[in-house]
Amino acid sequence: MILTEIIIIFFVTVMSFVLISGRGSWFVAGYNTLPEKEQAGYNKKRLCKTVGWGLLVIDIVVIILFAFKDRIPDAFHVIAGAIIFIDVVAMLILSETFCRKSDAD
Image 1 (tube, one colour):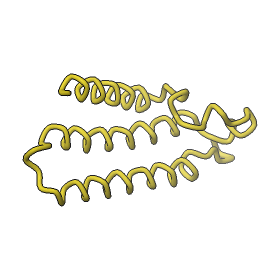
Image 2 (cartoon, helix red, strand yellow; image 1 turned 120 degrees about the horizontal axis):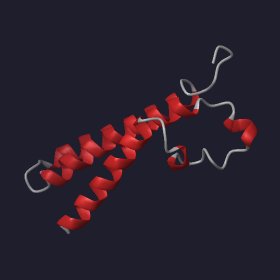
Image 3 (tube, one colour; image 1 turned 45 degrees about the vertical axis):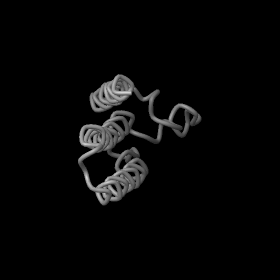
């Protein structure tokens, strides 16, 4: 059980840093399935960084949950779920606003 948790945390952490570096657009859900014309409307590097930072926030919450699973109060699970939900909503909003190419890009 502990080995599985460590492998999951390691994989998600590595993917977070790959995305934060601006690479790994193949990991962003739905981006590669877009037609070339629609992909051209996104700043790929910004999109990767946005998803990478969002994934890192989720990773930190999961690390805290795994590390203190028997010692944290039940209310923290609700708080962790809320943090993850807000993070996902923020990633969706940022990917449709901040990550879109403008005429200046």
